[in-house]
Amino acid sequence: MRRLGRAPRREAVRRALLGSDAIAYEDVLGAEDIRELLAGVRAAGTPPRALPLLAWIASHPNAPGELLVELYGEGGREVLLSLALNPALPRPVRDALLEHPDAEVRAHANHVTCRMRAVRPLVTKGAQ
Image (cartoon, helix red, strand yellow):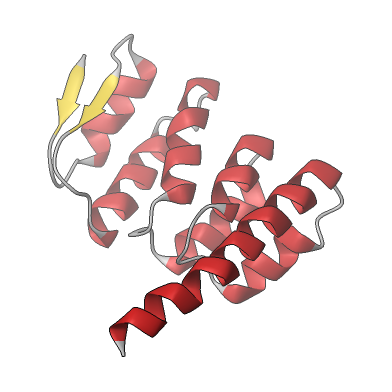
């Protein structure tokens, strides 16, 4: 198992994906860490075993918006379903998920969006 702490480097991610290592993360990843992580996935040629990692990035609240847009364009169903879970998802991407040709993706995005709308007033009401 390859343990990657804060600030994973793309070469370590590439080696882990091309080898037989499992990847474990420690600490909280920030936006730059996630950019580096995705660069490592791409440096490895985005192998099929990277799909769970891409889905995790898609749902990560610290993932930068431009990376989420890229993941929408290149992700499979698992990535699209995970994108819907991201509370920081840019509005155009959320709208695209709600209009996606795949009925399961549309239904999941609709469900998550409705749940977010239901919870949001509770959070803001308590903050006032």
